[in-house]
Each structure stands twice: as structure tokens, then as C-alpha cells.
Image (cartoon, rainbow, N blue to C red; front, side):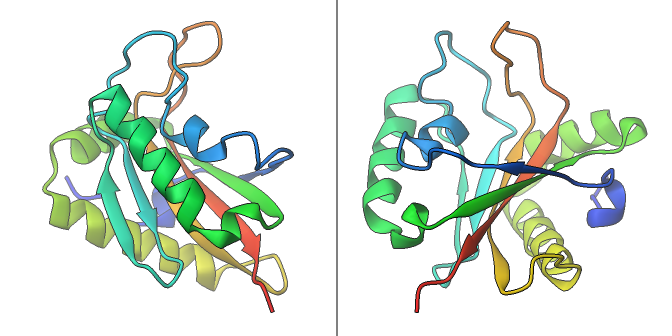
Length: 160
């Protein structure tokens, strides 16, 4: 099973990212998770002129190292962000989890590139571009319930 793109997802929900200085990438990388969490199906794709693509490390301290590296390197992290959550269509949940967990890195990278390009083509924010796409297959909520599998798309204002 290969995911097709944004048509595999529900209408996006939009959220404000209020405190980007308080470890936003830590949240994405689940560095502060009180229990070990399965991150095998989680990927981060940065299309911010760096074209970085990573499978989430399964070792928590490695995720913390990456968080520190990205927080120090990506200047746009400190810009004003808005977030978009794209939840996978209910009938595709198992296929999405299987694809993101067991699909080849190349297949997932191609999917995230296509997904991000489609989101960019359907942009609703004037002057903003999607900077990051982050897939969450096994994200836990605050009360340890499993969240619906989704992809974050972060929007940022480019610096002049």
C-alpha cells in the first residue's frame, strides 16, 4: 500500500503554535514523553531549503540530540508559526500505519514530498509556505490514549 497524497486525509484542522520557544521540536520528537513510545512509524520531513528527511530515532536521547541540533540551526523556528493537522481518513488508518512503519525510506520520502507539494499548491495562507511535514503514527495524548494518526504541516513567515 502506498499513500496517494492529501486526498487520503480529512479536511485539515488549523492550530496556533503559541510558544515556539518552549521546545516545539521537543514536542514533535516526543522528547518529554514520560514513557517510552513507539516512534518506528514517525518521520520528519523538512522542506525549508534544507530538504532534510529523517526517520524518528527510537532512542529517546538521540531524539533529544536532534531536537537540540535543529532548535539551534533552524532560524525560522523562532518565526511566527501556524500549524495544520491532517488526520488520515478512517478507512486508511491501518494502511497508513503499515506504510509509515514498514515502507521503505525512499517510498515514504517520495510520499512526504508529494504530500507537502500538494499542501503548498492548496495554500490558504497568503505569503506563507509549508516548512515542515511531520508524521505521527503512534503519538500519545496527555492521558496516554493513542492519537488518531496524522501529519503536522507547519507554516512560517519567511524572514526578509
